[in-house]
Length: 177
Image 1 (cartoon, one colour):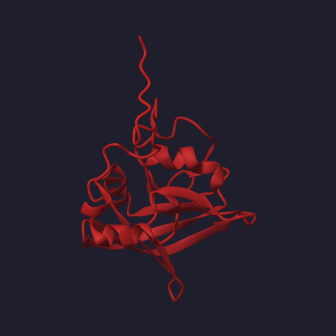
Image 2 (cartoon, rainbow, N blue to C red; image 1 turned 120 degrees about the vertical axis):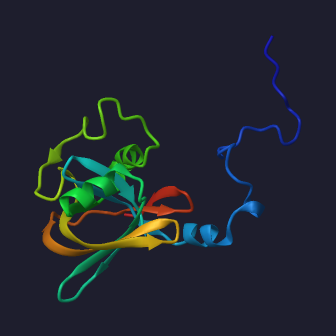
């Protein structure tokens, strides 16, 4: 027999049952979640890849790219070995791709097994991305619980104007069109 609980508070919620309760979360983590960030895909020869939302571009001579990544990731090992990597800004159609490279969605056959990819000297990039930049690794150092990667931008290939995929408060969002 199937029983439905109609008591107050017994509704189905669309929250993570394993999430740390709000009052116990780090205030800094909560602040970071309130800062909208672009969702990018970092890749390196090997190939290896990782979804990264902590990416910053600094215009200058030379142009630079900075980002925070997981020091224990396959991506970091590939960047360290190759000394170069690619960064592609993702758009609203790339939600599943972003989840796959973040380790949140299954990747049977490997991360690069599905979708169309463009090979570059810096790493593969999604063929339908709004563009990509090729970077040469300059330095990396521990920064908080992440690795701060500093790189020089060596190549820029921009496609047509594309809407960004944003990460805000633990979810993907897009700009109203």
